[in-house]
Each structure stands twice: as C-alpha cells, then as structure tokens.
Length: 175
Image (tube, rainbow, N blue to C red; front, side, top):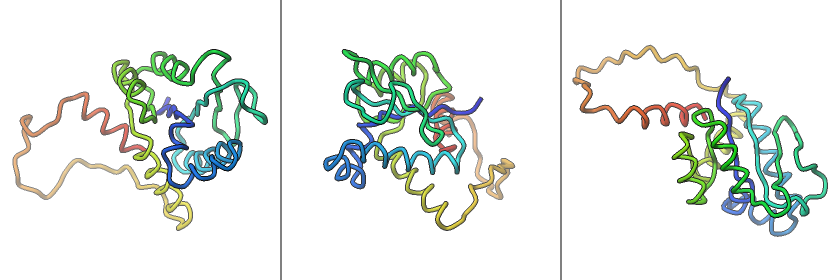
C-alpha cells in the first residue's frame, strides 16, 4: 500500500493565504474548498488522504466519519481534539504516514512514531503545483530513475545523508 497523507485540516486552512479568507467568511466553505483541492491532488497523485477537523458538534453537512470526493473526512469526538486523532493515526500508521501540520506538538510526536512530517505551507505549495499540472495537462513526472549520471565526482558514504533522512526525502518527493 502507498503513502497515507494525514492532514490537520484547520491548521492547513488557517495558514493558507488562499483558504484562510474563505474560512473566515464561512467555516463550511473553507472546509469544502480544502476538500476540493485535496480531491484534485488525489486524482493526480493517487495517495490515500485523510483530513481531520476539530469538533464533532461544529459540523453540519458531514458525519463524524465521512468520505467526500475520495477523501476521508474525520471529526474529533466531543471532548477530544483533532490533534489527539492525528496522533492516534500517526501511531497506528507509523512509517506509512505522512502528516501535514505546522503544529509543533503534532510534528514532534509524529516524527517520533516514524511518520514523515511536512509543514502546512510546504504542502500547500505541493497542492498548487498539482493544480497547475492539472490545468496545463502535464502528466506527473515519470519515476524513471536509472541512478546513473554523467558526473565524475566521487559519491561516497560521507556525502550521503543518514538513512532515515533519505527515506523521508523519498516519501516527500512522491508528493
């Protein structure tokens, strides 16, 4: 199974220059706009995506667990934060998870569980690139990496980042 992207919904919305004004006008429209962008990204990349929102009593058109446009939508239960739900998912998924959040507590916890973590603004850039590629009709880059380059420099272990960092970089490059 591929990468499972776990998105801290309100964290991404409220840090985005595009989605934050929509969210301030209408909370429901902000969530819907995020889901539209994630659905377009999923069509292009094909990764499993779950977006987690705070507040079981604050939603209107969604159930506590729902699926919209191929994106799993989860709301925290009454008395539980979205952070707790994200942490539980990161613990369960371990190295299969890529957590999107700029909340330092979630970042630290998820990284300790072996999940790859990417900041909300950095992920938004990935979303924008995917939207651009979809509009221009550009196919996703082929992953044909033969490993050979016409370079004569020596590349030994001293130039290599640690194994865990290389593994995380490979996962992020799939975004």
